[in-house]
Image 1 (cartoon, helix red, strand yellow):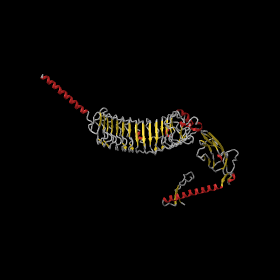
Image 2 (cartoon, rainbow, N blue to C red):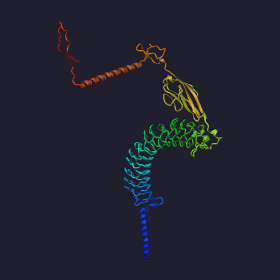
Image 3 (cartoon, rainbow, N blue to C red):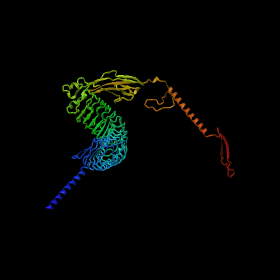
Image 4 (cartoon, rainbow, N blue to C red):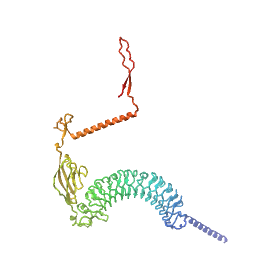
Length: 608
């Protein structure tokens, strides 16, 4: 009986011991939630934000996967600060006052995927800080005070895919700073003090897919700025307020599908840098002071589907502007200065799905008539275009027009040239003449001048078409004579007016000539001209030529004498005599004997 009681007591003691050991083991692996933190055991999350912490808490639960230390006063991370958190996946240290991170501070976080260090006071990141993070994919170091990226700063982050480094004080990026980032896909370098694109550093990122540059002080994009980035698909450049030009080969080597250059100072579409981007699908040039889209210059962008040019100074889209763009689906030119958009600007309107034309001073006439049959199928982005220049349709949406109103609203008036006389203009040789051509129509017609050789005249040169529609011939010559044509054109048609220009040459007796006969002759350039005909010389011209020739000869001789004088002075005392020694010839033999030689003779010559 007593033996049974002893066995029973022994079993109870063993059970109590095992339970105590289990509790002790459990307390070892599941430590209590640190003070100033909030724990979520189900999510294995530890939230210590806004806890007034000055250092990272000790004795953190080892099974923590999410650690939030934001909005504290942590200043320093020491070496191997998180070595007891091998399962940690996400670490957020944003919004602290951190200025120092020691080398190997994150050593032991072998599972970490996301690391955020934004909005601290870091000025430099020592090489080796990111050691021991083999699985890290996202690094956020935005809004710090980092001045430079040193060589091999990120070399241990072989799995890193995203770097956010916006709003730092970066002035230089070393050429080898990005070495080791073989998996990087997206890089953001916004709001820095860089004065040039870090081309050499970017060449290390052969796998980069997206590159963002925001608010940089760069005025010109230099040639080959992005070489060796063959896999880059998206390039975003925004708020470079001094950027006015892109060099011709600045985008050379890229195979972009999306390009954004907005809030800059481009005054023209950069056709030359864009022309080789044959894979480009999306182009955004919004908020630039671009005034025109020229015709037939987008044709190389065969795959372009979207063009955004919002909030600019766009006043004209030429006929054929989008010629060759067979896949063009979206055009957004809202908030510009356009008065019209003609159907001839497109390769085909059948592919167009979205059209942004709102907030433009549109003239609703026949040039916009093509929009009417498509107005129920086009997406205007919730803001259909309005007519702002017509009294009958002012401030009315296209969608509000009824079928009965359209014939009287969207109309054009055929151009008509008003001043039909004179049809013949005479001018003396060497004088300047201006021929006026005035036309009316709705819309106001454009005026073009055609030369006698049937070529349009440009606004440049001695014979040019002025901006007011006039023809100017400066210093008229006999060969300028002929029939010129003024052509007035608008969407409703054209009108023309021929003008005959006759230039009176100088009479042959206007000048007296001095004729030289028999001095020289030239072959006749045309039949019927006498080959012995005297060559006329103008007396005044002959006197001027003779005077110039004499002065040139006199000047040359004077220079030679002066040179010889100074040269002789530099040689010191000169001898005025010269002694010459010579041997005379042998005398002829007499009576078969040998000839005799005369002695060597000398004589002295006086130099003058």
